[in-house]
Length: 533
Image (cartoon, rainbow, N blue to C red):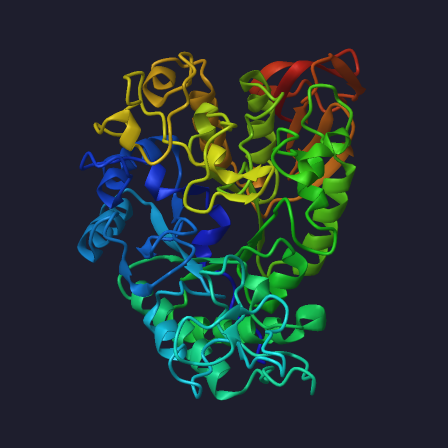
């Protein structure tokens, strides 16, 4: 495979912002967010300094998994509006210097997709993975009985309503005759369909895609060799047809996904050879009752008790960036739709400033999950909604609640009665909101805005600048580009770190509770400081 072209020129300066469209802004009073609602609030994003937005899936869907069960890749879901509404959103965003990316669910569809309903009637159709029943009439493990006239059953990826698209198996097995090679007719048709879907939306002005579960396409793929080859083929096509389009992976292993063809990969609470440990060791966004991994809070660096270390994250980042080089980027999100927000469990709003100071000065692409810029909290105890509950203790709904725009009863999200809201609002009377924080220059929102502006105006603080790490304990101390010192203390207790100032007194750029004097950096609890050397 020939070498890939360099990443799109704009991506190095991207500040990503993830929008869960159902919960962002409702323009028509039905209680569900929509394209027009996003368009109406683009000024907020422009003011904040965001320049790249990615939307969770907005294609037609029965919404058994919040849109990650697509029934038509080429049509928006009516709840969000029309293709013209999406085009208007893209145009208005473009006028403000904001690019819009879509979420591409590549590995499976809804069981209501016409591809699947046709496949369930036709034993000769291999767009999905089908198996015949055994002599005793039983199906292989995980296979679901056919809903159509076709005998046997299909393999789902997650919920039964999400049949896995057939991208082939890397290894054949005579005992499992349903395994097809990656170059069989069905897998070839699905690879062509991915190109067609991507081409359709890119020609309408979209800037690229975040690809859902990008590592999961080819089955039984040791080392993900065939999966990497598949994405490399698609990247080569992108390089020749849509040179400025970006491809971001939900993979969680940048040192594999970027060489495979992605321009960037998100660090996740799962994925990769260490099952998301670097991210969990950094900010383990959990309440202890949401997911089994999140109970391991003793290794979380951004913890008021200062019981962790940043070394796990820094070491993993070093290894990945050494392998990636200038071929792509690592993206560091505050949170996402699958995991708890930064403000969750025992982590309170006063602990968020040092987290943003770190995220927006570390050499990764920052991704802000909607509402985190004002400190919206994870809301426990919500009912299962559109597949939000994956396990008894794993409910994603708490990270998907309506955006809090103002202090009115509906929080500026919708004029619908509260019982028709997509999900309940945070009932806390002191819940944060955009309007209140925008009027307060000392708010988290203004801090995030200033940090984004500082990053945008200081190339050394961006995704490509060098970093020298001086301390991975408390405080975390590092120098960017040889010219900018950053010190962050996520703990409650004050801490100090020896630091000589032979080059003169560092000039404060954005500082709260950090001082450099008498040969030491002193940081108050939850303090942070960015200094010019």
